[in-house]
Length: 182
Image (cartoon, rainbow, N blue to C red; front, side):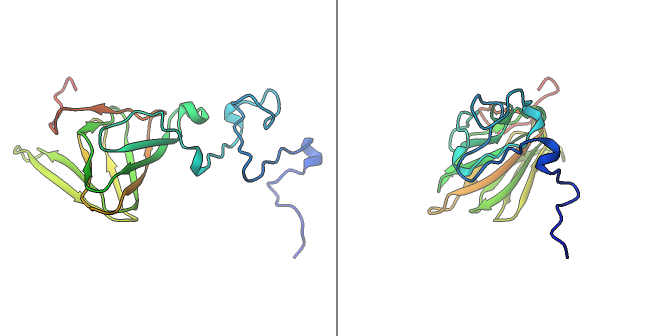
């Protein structure tokens, strides 16, 4: 086996000086600094968001904390938002929906419960989805719901991906089906 470069990896000599980042230095070409070559387009580079760099300046709902990793604001994404949500022990979020966003949820830790009203049979019924680490939940656009963490000791942490560049959050007075004008 030879030690030749990977066929998809250009050599630094072929492309000029390579830009290398090291652990702890970060790399955000859209921020003005010395890490990125002048004129580098925001969408022409990979972005590394470290666990300690999550943005808490995102839309919030009572009873939970949202942190953005990938968003229009953090990396210039145009069609995607991704981050974490934390629900404290023995806590329920307020009722809310996420507008036009499709939302995918991956349970990292804890046993959060996702509550919504199903009125597809004509009789509204509250449904509770009990989850655990490794489970996934899909939330369609405009579906009112809430997250609950019934565990008295353990925080529930989930990773969320949305089909919009920012975390759309519409807080609601209750779980109810939205009308056609929704």
